Image 1 (cartoon, rainbow, N blue to C red):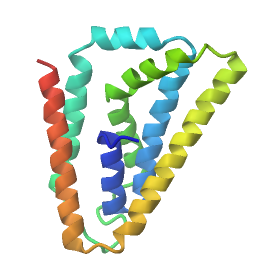
Image 2 (image 1 turned 30 degrees about the vertical axis):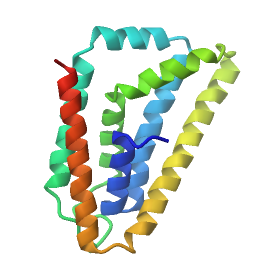
Image 3 (image 1 turned 90 degrees about the horizontal axis):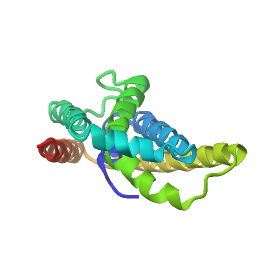
Image 4 (image 1 turned 90 degrees about the vertical axis):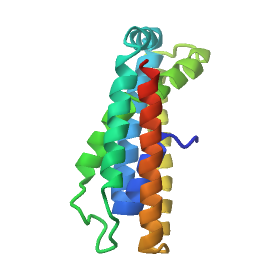
Length: 184
C-alpha cells in the first residue's frame, strides 16, 4: 500500500491522538473507497473519470486546500502525551475530515478506474460482495496501520513525536503545493 496523503494522515493522527483517531481516519478513507468501488462496478467509472477531467482544476484545487489546511493544523500543534485526545480531537471529526480528503484525492478514482475495468461487470449480488470485500479489506488495513502506529507511540519520546508530527505537516503541505501547481 503506497504512503499517500491518507496514509500519512492516518499515521500522524494515530501517533498524536491514539489508535481511535487513526482508525476513524482510515475508516473515512475506506468509506470513500467503497463508494468509488460501488460506482465502478455499477459501470459509472467512465462517468466519474469524465467528470474529473471536466472539473480538472476544481478537484486538485479543493484537494490542495484540504492538504494545506491539514498541514497548517498539524504544524501548529504540539504533541502531548497527557492523553490520547489531548486537544479534544474526536473520532467524528477524524472520520469526516478523512472522507473529505479522500473524496477530493484525485488519485483514488484514477487508480480504481485503471484496475476495475479488468473485472467484468458482476451480477448485482456479486457487485455487492465485491464492494463489501473492498471495504472490509480496507478497514482491516487501516486497523492494522493505526493499531501498529499507536502501539509504537508509547515507545517514542515527546521530542520524537513532535519531530514526526512536524515532518508529517511539512509533507502534507508539500503535497498541497503540488496539488495547487496541478491547477495551473
